[in-house]
Image (tube, rainbow, N blue to C red; front, side, top):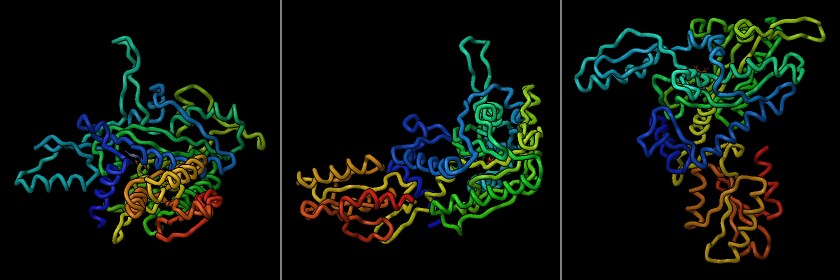
Length: 438
Ligand code: ATP
């Protein structure tokens, strides 16, 4: 089951309109994925849950949204031009390229050749920069080579001065961003786990440059980030922290921990929490010539703050939530997604579609619920089939309008996880659904 769970998720995502291979009708584009109607809702809900928890529920955290294309000097200052690299090796037999540190991929490739009785020889590893380039401008020969951002972090740091000048935050404070990032990944793999275009959700917390206050914020962030997954119903036995070994950390990182999930291919990264010291602001001060220090009104001190970063992808957690929610039961496949994440919060059915009075009443309820929630309508096939169809896309509640509804203004509401049905008044439906979202 675990072995082919990923394949089952890929197939469900395609069949039910969550995620499709990018540019599929043209044979695809490796490392890109397109989100369909349900995947778009799921992704939106995931980002919204992060934003609510990390920004709106917090004091002293501000949101921002920077450009994907930035002045190329940004990437020199951040160190990405010099060292945003992965070690690359090439198979001399078929010229396919791999990341030298991804031993599973290499082993798999060697086994493939071994089956065909072919010998494999590898080239020496060489460093490959994974920033994606684009050409900007209209005059040939004068086009500026820019990079599509390889991480969203820098867009926040280069706006540090703008945010403090406009918002006057008291330290410690945070700046959060969600947005696309691009990497020329050598081996995109495991569905949306490693792709060339993806989204990130990040909070940069600026703290006083002293180890005690920095580590206290770091520890709070670590706990807070783990809690986010648990609040959204992820199985706690499948989550763990992993501290980076010294040789894994960027040279400027003073501490680095990952949150990992136990995937069908083993424990793997969901996100990272990093203590970046003053690396970012110092480098941008140096390269831009702007003074990016902070003046503390209380202590009258001026300093370059340190940064504690939490950096999550959107797609990796999304995939982990799908893996975690996927259950095969005797008669059905069910996605036990937290109602906050579920693409639809409820589905409304008329018991029979050829009875205008049932359809009219069901439509009335559907339209009323739709004012506040994302709700599906289904009148195809029999009720049992409709239940299973909604289970498979994770809809927490199915609401059926039958002949009794016309008399008693009540409906049957069926719970996705327990499959229990109960009768409730139409007037109580909104509150019932809202409660599940708290
Ligand atoms: P990896 O070692 O797996 O390539 P990373 O350690 O380089 O990842 P970071 O640079 O720390 O990743 O990026 C922060 C987060 O962004 C990751 O935890 C992950 O959720 C997400 N992420 C990074 N690269 C990709 C990618 N190619 N596809 C999808 N998500 C990604």
